[in-house]
Length: 556
Image (cartoon, rainbow, N blue to C red; front, top):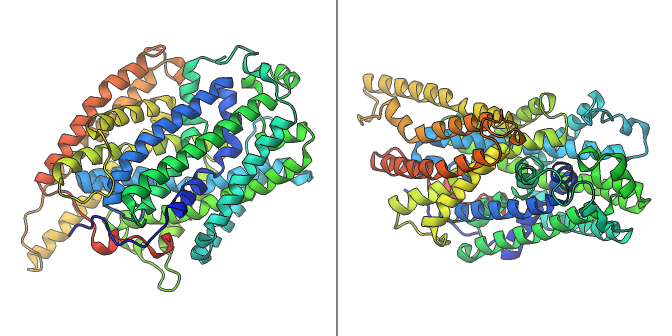
């Protein structure tokens, strides 16, 4: 039985907007402006506009599917609903990696901002030469990760109720920081000196969108999609909340970026040899310290804990929902889906996410910038299924109640998919290759799980306990997922051969790589939609039960 609109819990529009803003203002604002300026110079302002347009298009496609299927952590399940188990696991795996990776990155952000403290031990948390966490810095990030995780482990419902207060505090701190930095002295010459407005070319702007925390910052839209089905009027609340949260987020991020660019002392910029040489461990706090704004430094140090802690409330819960969804479909052990009878939290799933967070911290999580690039690329892959699911379900489930319908979906969906494909290419090689390999690891795992499931069903039939139904073969179940595998391999190949400005071997110099990805993306989109339609015709897709589709108690 399908659960279309689900049970409404009466979540107000204001609360939904606060959830979106609270998720958008995590650690991204602490580092995004400094990282984007280092890569793109003053043209980083354009990167934020491109980023919010891209995320807005993705968000609206997910809004339609999310309002129709208000499943907690539903982004990990939509691939299964549109194409069946194999693609569901591939996309769910990518969504889980992207979401679970947010847990340690918030702790890394707080640790890096500790270097602005006056204590000697705090200065030793980051290597001044490499700008990466030292051994003591990694240990501190681990402690913070565990502390934030335990807070949600024991009292996630209490903290969720305080989300509005945390959001208002998180919103006030960057606004005050902008006013203080601009008031201390604004150097308009910074926007044209040292190579002009776009000193490193427009390709650097595109790279900044996916590698400098722009996509990472706006990823908070997922909270609105995941919880929008609990709104009083989701058809109105979801798009309004998405537009409101993203628009307000864009205004603040542009203000932060402009304030950072204009407040850097010209002499410091000259000594650094331009924007690429300006590398601050704690961008806004270090800049405020140079400008003798000590009260701003103190405020930012406070904000460096409030922002990550507030965002991690949603991150820990969302990552647990992702694991639960994968367990419900049988690709993760079903024990991971068990919920504590008293606290209502999926504790086994939370333990898995904690272990994953620790592994990331000890391997690639040596700095916020390093992990943000990998996380952003994983996020882009997780976005791919949104517009495709809209296209498939419009054809296969036209009667499905849709509280929100994406306007001009026939045009916007393939365009959105092409935009996402380009964003993955802009993530630069070798990051594109790494995240492609990490995603495709799920394919052989899916094959093993499905083969074992088939063996178990055969034994049940042999013992007379089977249902006697005809099971689809392994190749038949994989058929709806071949487009995804081919798309990832193709994109990684073009990335490896792309322009040197995108990390490639320059076989496809300049914009040729981007053009090639953009031109071929619609081919993969229509292949994907056709595969989804066939999967429905063959009965490969699944639908959530009413219990699964209803929003969780803690969501409100």
